[in-house]
Length: 144
Image (tube, rainbow, N blue to C red; front, side, top):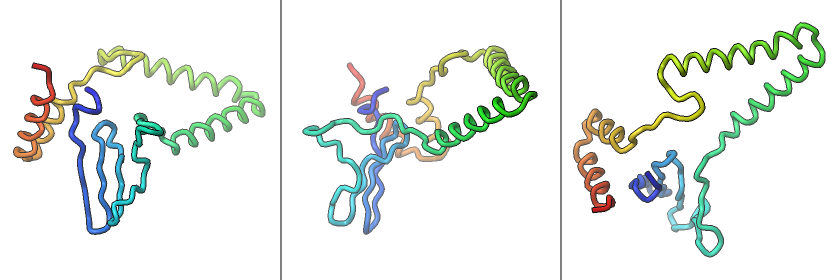
């Protein structure tokens, strides 16, 4: 499914208007009451793209902190030189065993039919009108 296949969600108040791309729940358009863009507008003359993959800065900073602590332990503690890498190896083995036992791919994501999932979510939530609109848009965009 591409970005063009999914209808964007629009939200507005008296002061702000937002458009959310359902691919990653990415806030892509944010405008004030005077219609001024508050985010990058994807001007094709400069760069048509937006951030298709949102990088989690908190996770990256946390990883850097944990990695720094691991290096510190490896350099300063005799037992840590053995126990630290051992826990990493045990964790990776546990991950591999879990994925294999559940029948999941070990080194990639499992395939998910996002359109069917979205229809089921809308049906379960009782949003039948929105579900019908979503199905109509999917059918309109699918090749004949």
